Length: 238
Image (tube, rainbow, N blue to C red; front, side):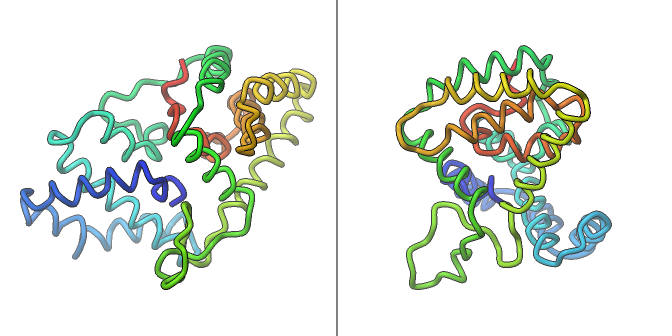
């Protein structure tokens, strides 16, 4: 849901809305109503128990399915932005396996100093959403200013982000890699823009997650890398 609230992703979802008007209506209905939706919801409910999380995951899955339906009419970069949250867990068309850890970190360090303008602002907004209590969604905040990044009521991405980071630190200690782990953090924090956008510490967290990816579930790595996923997708670090 955090990924879908990015302005860049929201723009792609608007493109899909336009393309669906010319799509096979029966196929559109299959992904938005009826038995297929019930099947997907049941599958999601097998791994998520919170009602708000199930609803958010179902909506995200439906959006991606509709994107696949009209993929041939979209620019490759548009589809990649839409599919990104699933790209590493369920590789889609054209996605390659992530490179070795040292190459990923080297690429991340090269990319960090290039962050500027709207892209950097989006990174900062996502980073803040993962360090603060959830803001109300647009519907809940009717009549008030709509936040750049909002999530459905009942979901707390910041809690998951904090828990994942604690797990990374614990694993670094358990595997006797703390010194190298801290060095990776420091390198990323040094490379990140120091211009008041507040992403320096998050760059260190992302680098630490990449460094420990061999002993972490991939979903934890992706969560900790999320602020930078729109600027340079995780699977592109090679």
